[in-house]
Length: 153
DNA sequence: CGCATTTGACCTGCGC
DNA sequence: GCGCAGGTCAAATGCG
Image (tube, rainbow, N blue to C red; front, side):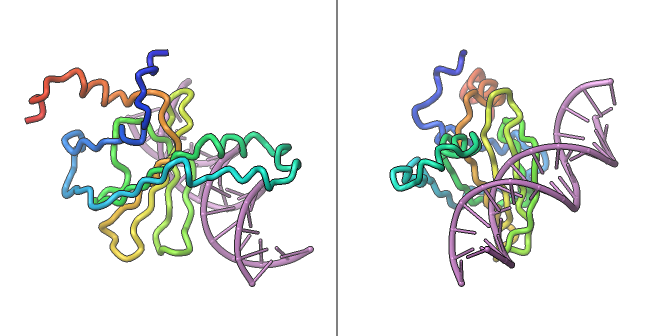
C-alpha cells in the first residue's frame, strides 16, 4: 500500500478547496468541532459476555470512533472535498425540519462515513460530520500536492 | 450497460 | 416490555 504516509491524525487532513467548487457562492468555515477517540470510551468491562457475540457491525462501530463535525456556512450541503461519496440514506431528524443525509466513501476499502444536515435555526449553515478516517488520500489532495504553491493564485 | 441516487423497510439502542 | 428515534440496507429507478 502506498498510503503508509497517512498522518497520525488523519482528521486534520480534511481540507476544503473552494477553488475546486464550481458554483461556489459563499463559503466560510465558521466553526468546527473535533471529537476524537475518547468519545467512544470502551465500557466493555461492564458489558456482558453476550455483547461479544454481537455482529461485526458492532466491531466496525468501535473502529470508526474517529468523529469530526464541521459547521460550515454554505448554500450547498454536499461539497466536493476530493473524495467520492455515495449517498446511502436519508432521514428526517426530529430536532430539525430538514432531512439528514448519509454518505459513504465509495473508494475501495475505505469505510468512512459522512453525515450532512442543515442547521435547525439557520438554513445557511450546514453541519457535516465525518466518521472514521480514510485509508487513502483524496485524489484531489494528491493532485494539489503536485502543484506549485502559487498555482492557485 | 454500469453506476449513483432514491426511498421505504428493517434493525438496533435508549428512555420511559 | 414498549415505543421512539437514529442509522443502515437494498431493490428500484434514473442518468451518463
